[in-house]
Length: 408
Image (tube, helix red, strand yellow):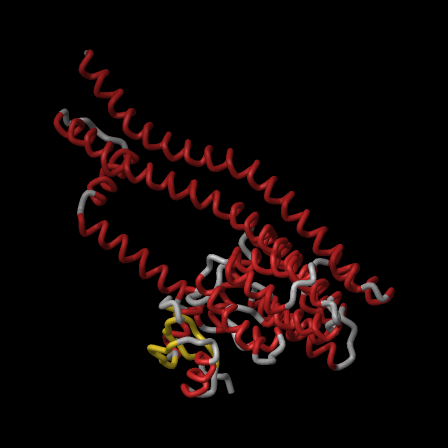
């Protein structure tokens, strides 16, 4: 059974307003925890299932990735320099500008000051610190290598952020160009074509089929009801696409569609493979066993399809199968990755091989993005040229005939 989540509002001794969320068994437990932090509580409400679902969709109350990256990088530096844990947390709280992260760290600091371990304190704030982070920190505490683990975690977040940024940039470019081109085409059809239509009508010019089609489209777009219907249809389509994503089956279906898109699909496969390999390698190097590492990576795999495959891998590993058997059976992982993992299992260097896989596919993604950009730009320009050329041809063909008739 999941622990209830409460939203609270309080004020510090200096009068600063503090808002946040915390997991607790009851309102009394929330009040007790906040009072230990010298906070004057003004409101406590249990978060409803609807609010929790909306919050997860919008990532309300969750720190930004950039803020988490900056925190772990500076925090690892402070711990490695020999600064006590409480002092390092206080410095990190002062440095961060993210309100959600600052409030989560204040709660973590309070728990640490009352004898809790760093991993247990962060584990109570799952919205701010995912299980992957907590598992690595717990392993670092157990092995006495917390500074090394924090450094690896910061490096992992940096590489993950870089890869996400490059993939999003590659996929966003054609979308932006298509939106701009669509806006230009709509402007030509809705504003320019009707002006020529009036002139053709006054001279009774015989119009070709392409021109009549454009004029009909222009007349349609000049009607407010047409715009309202178009916007309503777009909103309904967006809702019909996003609503299933809130369910497990719908999210899995949309993910499979996304992974089979001709150009973007292979790019996403490589990016997800690199991400999973790097996370597993980082967890293994932090002292976490393979079965435990797989279980930690499942919720942060970044793809329901790959998460389901990793769950089957987890079951197979517990039954005594080698890692490569369920990976091959899933048909999601590249044969090169499976071959390198097999070598890693046989030589006892699985973490090293996983890092090589991550580096290889990250480089492959970067090369694919560069190639995609080089090919996509002229292709989109040509497509836009064809559409605009069609409009120009459809307008100037009857105009040319009109000029010819007038000259005669």
